[in-house]
Image (tube, rainbow, N blue to C red; front, side, top):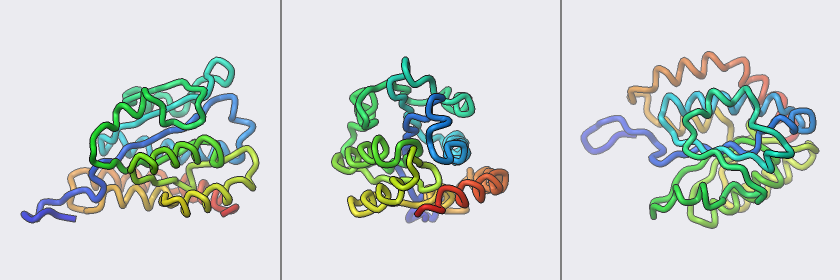
Length: 204
């Protein structure tokens, strides 16, 4: 996409990334949790390249632990890191960053698909934002919950897609200066992408 002068422009103009409750205590409970982490790492590396604001939550951190260590280095510059008891991530400490009348394009990774991811998505949609739920970046304890949740979110108006599709849609133009770094990221994570897709999309 280019403006009237032909200058390359990103396709998504107001992207944001939500990382929902990827905590240590869930590591052995969530179906294919390690694959969700792989996708989340890729998305957060893209955030560094493209300077996309990132918002991260934990659910009752005192009981359920910190965000997993694999993601910590990629979240050091997160716009907000919030502990919550509310299931949705749309809490005041995060929603205050979305006061503009212009809608944002929020991508969500995390858990659980049918609870916190669903309620976060519904709140974002209700507040006028566009939402991308990454099918290779969300999961639940019971794998049977996932396709039902994703089907509901599609019907509610969310875009259910994959991390690579979202990444290229976010960029939108091979002429932007960051494109070369994004291509390198896609190549570097190609094996992880195949692993996550093969596992998490097997129930969709």
